[in-house]
Length: 369
Image (cartoon, rainbow, N blue to C red; front, top):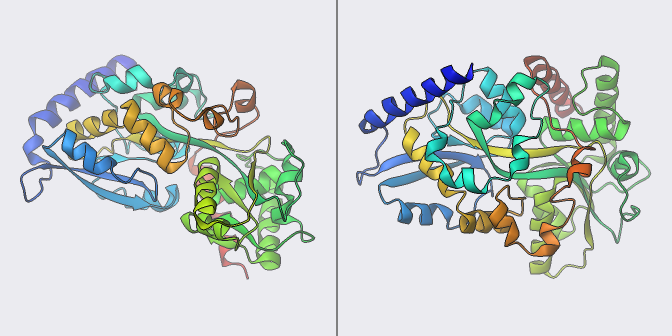
């Protein structure tokens, strides 16, 4: 969509939605509902209640999903704010499933969003990449690496070698108590990274090699598959290594301390792995366009952004919130990569061909025995 046309579309949508606000869902007490669809365990415990206190005319209906792929089929339902990852955002832009934002309603985002997000490459298609921030704003971000108990797994300190780091998940001579995300992009991605290939490859031979590796892994190790459950399994000592988002590493450290377990949990980030940013956007079938903007902007209040960052463990794109973080976290290159580290990582790209092929591979892995 051309920029001038897009701005006109935003203005028209704002007028239509605000003028028709009475058509939006209302709670039994007369408040306007805002339906928010987010990842599990991905918001501070009191954020919703505090938002409703700050904006008493709104009531938040909060729902959760586990992965982008489980979220996607439900989008015919009416949500006002969804928080998919950047590759899914690109897919939703292409499919016209999300609508342009009205940045005049997002003053805190304008003020506090880290400028680097204007420079990052979100898609192999430059025209789509350049449009991402017209449709979505960063909520939290992370890298994908390996969490492991250094008492039981030996990885050289500071190593970024993908083969060396991921081998604990694929080498039959290593331990068997491992975890894998039940998410096609993360699990296929770490297999491809281990093999030395791009996490976005469409090369048939490379994808077949990754498929064979994941099927072999399943038969040899019977890994624990999941998402949120893996945090508890690592913290309890049930697993000794797992693929993990960097934010989950921080959560696991807190849970280990609470349990008093003797686990030296560390995080290794391989070169060529993934970085990912989860983004707030508004579906085309949203019923409360104005309320959605109020919620998104509220999440960029520095204190609210800080509370969510600290509770969830993921990295904040809010410059003021980051400045208030513990320096050990804010300066950790695994959580907040510098430009040099970002240059070694990839985002997941999205296209109909990629989604179809990777889903086919992952379904084959899950069906194998």
